[in-house]
Amino acid sequence: MIDTSLYDTDTVLNVLRVENLDKDRFVGKSHFMGSPRVFGGQVLGQSLYAASTTVDGRPPHSMHAMFLLPGDLHLPIVYLVERVRDGGTFSTRRVVATQEGRRLFVMSASFQAPEDGLSHQKSSGENRDPDTMPSSLESWKQRGEAQGIAYYPVPVDFRGYPDGDIFNAGVSVPHKRVWMRAPRKIDDDYRIHQALFAYVSDYGLLSTCLQPHGYKVGDPRLQLASLDHSIWFHRPFRMDDWLLFVMDSPNASGGRGLTLGHVYNRLGEMVATMAQEGMIRVRETR
Image (cartoon, rainbow, N blue to C red; front, side):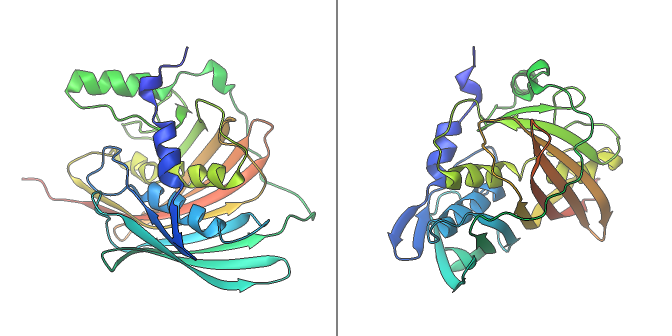
């Protein structure tokens, strides 16, 4: 039986469905998930959902975002969508997210009418059955309780290699394999599945950069922030089916780290690719 206290799926889905104030202007509320600032994945998902509502019959195939300023959890976020172009097959949108006139985030997205074409992909490699793997969530909750740290629910289950924890500590190669899936069925609107994907794509990427250096997310010596984030959608998928996130960090230097990720369904089909660069600074300790 699913422990519903571990999840906030309904809350996150409601947050991602931003309100349409008038043509091409939307407003979103923020959701506290443990961070003192607005979670970057929330802004990614909300901006993609807003842009998608201005395009008929063309799902997004790519989005490219820049994080400019941290967001205030207590203020609404206004999303202004610019209809850059609607061509015969492709549409382009630009989204600017603001709070009280301050630009927090900018995003460009491209949409394409479905069509057939050449097909090939990089293999996902050998995979374990996610149904036989331990969930991260119960261990996160138990670990937090032992350390006096509150557990904050998440919208999807995480089952990572080797022991189920996507935020593994210790020194290891900058590589991570994590299965993710919503704990219940979600309606058939592709916009909400892609918005939720954008939300959860902000989990695990930056932490992959830390693995060769023995740091983990939450270390008080670290100053971490997402700088930019890109997603390419290759094939249809559902967030209520298992998806395998395979993440690698090819480089960290100059106070920044880069992680690339490929995402596969249970059939081994690549459904998306993502990339994120983040600021990684190590403070001096005294």
